[in-house]
Length: 308
Image 1 (spheres, helix red, strand yellow):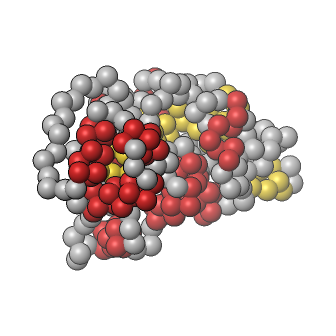
Image 2 (cartoon, one colour):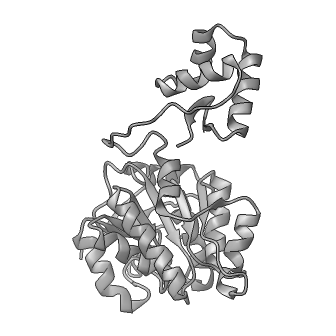
Image 3 (spheres, one colour):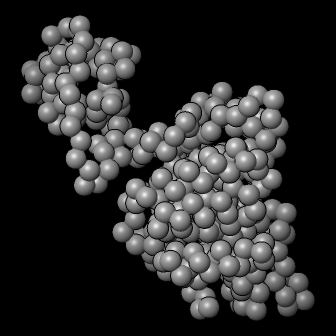
């Protein structure tokens, strides 16, 4: 299969990687670089996962891919490959990020899965050049010795994790022990401002210890694919028609007027203040009370939506 190479800024899908810490100098890929992607979710977790973790990862990937979301994983044993399988079974697209040179697929047992990802419109990507490319830029923890490229694979997979997080609008940790590479991906997501979702697990199960700790530290609690879709598509999926009812509540006239404005589609805080002829302080007090009561949710940049 043909190996292609690009710099991050040369493709819409990868341009975000030009802004991350330790940005990749070059990317190598086999397949088709995704285009016109609405949203992207990275799904990671334990290599030695349980049937519980498998179920979480597969169902999440399947439902998200069915909604048009691109799934990013690492093609490793366990959760990574299960997430890729779920996306493919749903007829969606997925991208696998390697921690090895592009011409050295690991694990080799996933060669057929990698080929299916490529055949169905996805791609396998690595920041590590083919081993024969002596003059290509070196990736993280890669050196030249006696004319040959040498890679420290103990750390290259950790460097790979920043690419998974960087390419994702949200990351889901399906199952992870207290010491897990998935927690490294989670830390990159937090640093990059990527939405982090974590599936809770049995308190007595070692493979859930890392997940439960992330939730305790403030990660989004994941219970179903809809949890992620509601954050990524606060106004509903593209093309999806939803009928919303005006919430009924006992509040002040200002609060009620704000809810009516948001319900009618005016989600910008400054425009609401102007439309209602109220002060910024009045709006701030009222919107805070509405958020506390669970009637509205912030979308960022002083924009708001009703909580469904």
